[in-house]
Length: 470
Image 1 (cartoon, helix red, strand yellow):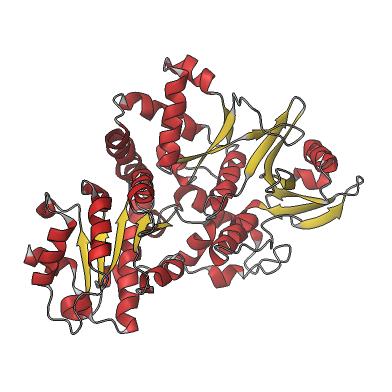
Image 2 (cartoon, rainbow, N blue to C red):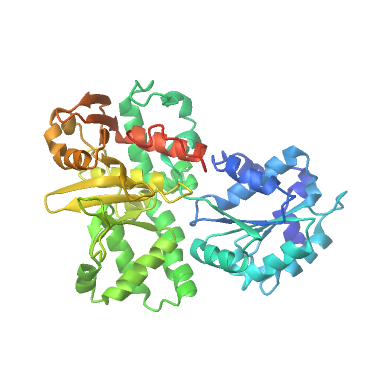
């Protein structure tokens, strides 16, 4: 036990995290996570949650590296991977006792303890709350991949004692930063201005992001990129569908769940009718809806609800849209797409929504559909009135043929919107339409980049710069 703990905590000997992890660039979320860990005066544990393979373990180790840089004694920091077989049957209190036996002498004792993959411990939330109450001298940080269960149990048992922190898949902005290309494409202070490297170069990276960019390892490793299906399907999707969800929710028919997820992934950004899915699959409609709730709780998909032409919600919605929270899941399950693929429109729309899913507040995003028209994205204010509307295209045609945006313009007129946004493949401009509404055209890759950057930079106080067309 002591030998294992020593191996998991190399800084006890070297005063540094392992070189293998140190060489990986940290995610932008590190700057948001660090203040919560450094806040030792507040008696609250930090619970880091998120889907599999988004970099939670790396974030913990990069956090430890920052604490060491801050001057925290190496012997005051402990990391424990709770899912290791050696720790089976031990409580968190037992693990802390073993750490205190194993750790070298620290001047002021332990100050930070990190529990990784904590969901593998039964009743972890009860044990963690007891530790928080009984050890005010220690800051506890826990992480886990079963995001749905972690959040549920954290809210139920950790009220007032836990601070939840969600780590989502990579934004397009983070993907560019991880590749070291941020300076090449500029800061986009004026997204309608020129891109130093050219829109063609940015679009090439955007297509790479759609295919490989959602996970740090997939984004940075050419070896994993050579077989993304094994990485995403076997290491991520299958473990969630075959292990996490069944164990959390008592799902007995894994084939049904797998069939549904595969269908939804194939049709990302398309409208879904549970009754039609039930008819095609032979699974009862209530069960379909229950499975969709589970998949959304696991952060694999996101449901976006429909509005009428008058921007009101349907009381009984028989259809809605489903988006993958990470567009690269589709490429791994089926095949990578190329820039000229007919699928690019749906994947670009999925990517735009995926950036918005990082916001730590309710974005009130919907789509509107009526008998003769549709608008891809509508954001409502707190009074349920449209703030702005946008159409996602992977084509420059609407620039020359604005008549193709008739539904968008009609919706804007009826709700008094001064401007609307339409994404393109390469064109950036603003024009005044004959209706008096300003049409803003912006490449989908640019909007995705700026959305991701601004949402991360403005967590908790989101600026309107480019996030909305008005």
